[in-house]
Amino acid sequence: MPTELVLPGGGKAAVLPASTVDGQLVVPELVQRVGWWDGGAEAGDPFGSVVIAGHVDSAKEGIGFFVRLLKVKAGEVVVLRGAGHSAAYRVDSVTSVPKDALATESGAFEQTGDHRLVMITCTGAYDRSRGGYQNNLVVSATPLPT
Image 1: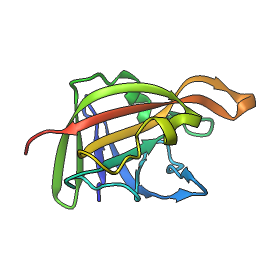
Image 2 (image 1 turned 60 degrees about the horizontal axis):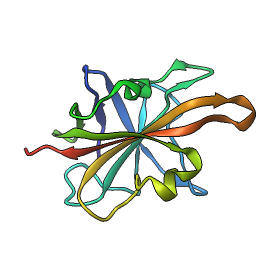
Image 3 (image 1 turned 90 degrees about the vertical axis):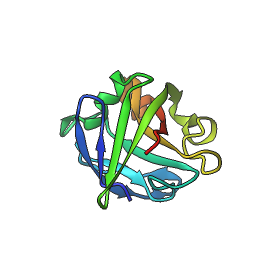
Image 4 (image 1 turned 120 degrees about the vertical axis):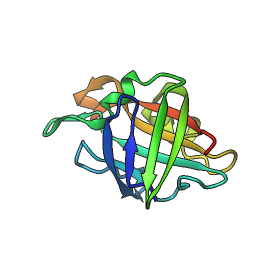
C-alpha cells in the first residue's frame, strides 16, 4: 500500500486509504493528504490502476496538495513510496473529464490491462450552485523500469 506520493518538483503528501461509499470515492478531508483507492491496484502489481485522489482546494483549508497536478506535464516523473519500497512512474497523459463521466468514460478505475498510476483531482469552472467543480483532472502514468 502506498504511504507517500512525490510529485515533480519534490512536493510530498501522505497517502491514506480511501474507500468507495455509495458509488463515490471518499477522498481524505485534509487537503494536504491524498487517498489511495483501496479497490484498486497497489504499486508494483502486474496489472490494474493505482488510483490516488485528492483535493485541489477547500473553503476551510485553502489550497490543496493536488493543485500541483494542474501544472504536471507528460514526461514528468512521479514516485510512490510505501513499506520501504518505491515505484517511479512517467506521466503519459493529463486530461479533463466531466465529473459525471469520471467513472464511466475516463477509464481511471480500470483494473484490467497494464499497470499504471492514475491521479485524480478537481478542475474546470467552480459552480457553487451545482456543488463544486464541474470536471475532474485525470493524470495517468506508466511505471518506469526498476
